[in-house]
Length: 157
Image 1 (tube, rainbow, N blue to C red):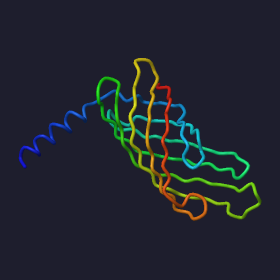
Image 2 (cartoon, rainbow, N blue to C red):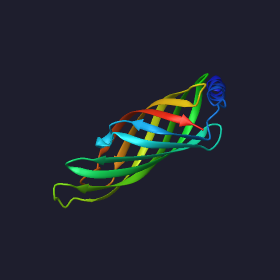
Image 3 (cartoon, rainbow, N blue to C red):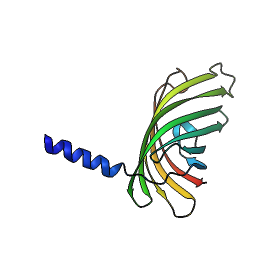
Image 4 (tube, rainbow, N blue to C red):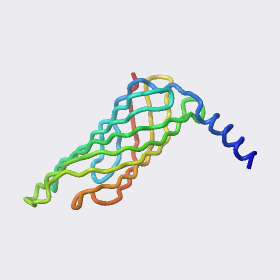
């Protein structure tokens, strides 16, 4: 047991080494959760290992118009060089309007998790691939578990 504790401390000490998280990053998150597709994404560096991510997604279709705003707090760990992995949690809210004359318009809220990998290039480009499960709370539009896999392309400044 003592060896396991020492090994755990060494492992987390290695994984939690500081990396250079940019102060700001803005770009697109290209995914397919619940039909939203592309989201405008902004990341704000809070420390060497933490950041806040805000994503705004919208959809304009024949069936419905909708938007959602997602906020996530993320922890970032360096794997090697510019290659990192991250995990986070948060939530958001959104609205939808039916274009078919139905009366099921409204607002919804959700909680979300996030886990992904990213590569921070030597020039101001950040590429990421993440998985985001979301659980919605309003019956009718987003009231179940959705899984979102997305590619992120962001400019860092």
